[in-house]
Length: 348
Ligand code: ADE
Ligand code: ZN
Image 1 (cartoon, helix red, strand yellow):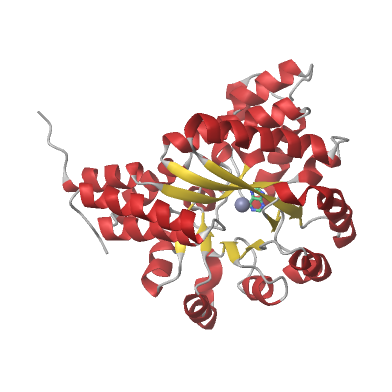
Image 2 (spheres, protein in one colour):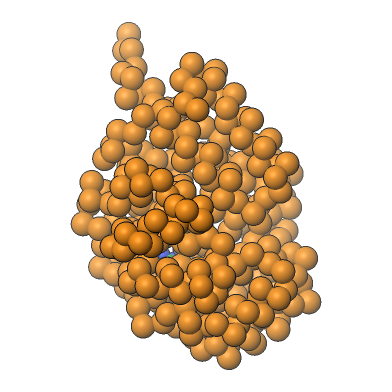
């Protein structure tokens, strides 16, 4: 009989712990199998012979090299049913990883630019969320992301399309090519988002400089920073993140696959945690980067061998950094406490 080593049991504890995912792009959950199925359903031809050929193209050397493929694959998403099925496929995998709550990005401009109506995208995703909650008890929210390689004026057009549907949109974000597109480019757009009373997040400090993190906070009023892993290059900024409790939604496998760090051992996650920054793990674009949330946990644990207390903190941060109500957060944290107590490794 094989007795699990303590290291295996900490990994098992982390994989089975309840958690939230706060940084996942729904378009980045499009697995090759579903991409080909949707292409067939919509009478389209992908520029790859088969799933293996598509997977072979997942060899990125920068954020832009990934985004080029990510936008091309999104072309198979045409109908509300396609968006619903994409959402359901993600929620099923997330629930299997013990994700209780997910705050999910969508990029409407990727679709409206191809003639897909905004409401088709939103109807499909919202229906997927409704069915996912019914089937797996997972709660989900939608965060509309503006593409920063486009203009602020184009962002305003998208916001106008979104405004009649605000009851189904839980926040606003900023994503796509970071270098050369500072948050300040979107100051007026996000001022309007703030007026609408929705929380704001922004990708910053992924490939771009730490100054973009400061801008996202000061100019856009971001409540969370997506990635933010370059913050450590500016220790005054780290102090600010700690003092103000600004969460960073860290995506380890993404950062390795996009060459932000040469290896997991060189990732800044451990140092950010040690400094007291409110970080948690996320999968970003799991279909493209080698896996979902528990795959990120396995990769991080192989590199850092965190103890149970650290995994508890990461999961607790994920709930506390969410935009869910204090009552929902408290309920999930009680389940987290029970999980660690049952394992006899309570860490708080
Ligand atoms: N859109 C999808 N994934 C992204 C990432 N990692 N950074 C910026 N924009 C994105
Ligand atoms: Zn992202």
